[in-house]
Amino acid sequence: MNEIRLARPDVGEPEAEAVLEVLRSGQLTMGAKVEEFERAVASAVGVTHAAAVSSGTAALHLAVLALGIGPGDEVIVPAYTFPATANAVELCGARAVLADVDPETFLVDPGSVAAVLTDRTRAVMAVHLFGRPVDWEALRSVVPDGVALIEDAAGALGASYRGVHCGALGALACFSFHPRKIVTTGEGGAVTTDDPDLDAAVRRLRHHGWAELGSMPTPGFNYRLPDILCAIGIPQIAQLESLLAAREQVARGYELRLGSVVLTPRAAEGDRHGWQAYVVQLDRRDDALRALRAEGIQAQIGTWALHGLDPYRTQGAFPGADRAFERALALPFHTQLTDSDLDRVGEVLTHL
Ligand SMILES: Cc1ncc(COP(=O)(O)O)c(C=O)c1O
Image (tube, rainbow, N blue to C red):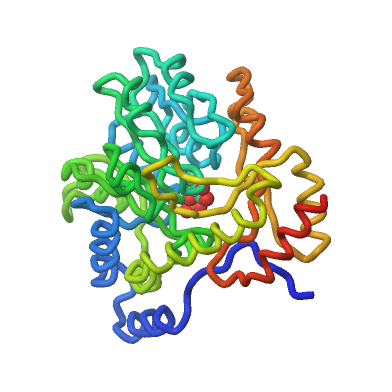
């Protein structure tokens, strides 16, 4: 029986052609494809600026630094997220302060955010986990003016909150183009914003700190994304709507088969899910993982409860994150899944 893969990127001939074009041009980095990719990302998100960077993690790191956050500052991070969300804060010398999540939606609980705000809080990481938009109004209402909202939209390209694209809600937003994302460049990321000063800061920091050649206000990194990789992303962004529609179709297929078997994911009424991953919840998650793998079906846990990892162990109890961590199961999710693939997954989970 053929193995059903967890993820499979939507790349083919157009991407291969685009890479060849770059190779033949002799301009492998800091060229026209970077600018074209950045314009495509900005337009898809509905913002004025998008800076391409080497990963979603680099995007988060630069977003925090661009806000001038550093030692003595605190940034609130959901206790259930990919570790990079918190690591980026800690690596700026600031403290990642955990807030609990709603175990049903996986999203940060505004009440828990309010409870850990201090006069050192400089920002809150709003993670649209697995592509489900955060309840922005509810979060915004507990965050004082002067505390920035940074979107971790790593998995939320194409998602929208009440008609506004994820990535256009916060002071800055961070995207990932890792192969498990709807648009991939192999590795890659972007920072989006409507603020020209923040965009300029991100661009300086991704390129050694240069404001212009000979002028370096602060030290920076090499977090650039080369033209070869930007070229891979451009044809996919042009197809974003159809990629999203194809994922919505797979999600509907799962809902039909699993809606009464496990807790299935969905966006809130009026929002659009980005469908980065299809993560269900059930009590016997580890049994399900074993059973799926035994049938040649790749599956994975959702993501991490950060207080279970060494750098974040001392922050107390987060029952919502614990419950999410124990029950979340990522099922195979990509546009090439067939009805019979979905049937096979459905069979295993129904007869657990
Ligand atoms: C919520 C979240 N934030 C950040 C990242 C980091 O992105 P990257 O792998 O491109 O560094 C990921 C990656 O999966 C993620 O899921």
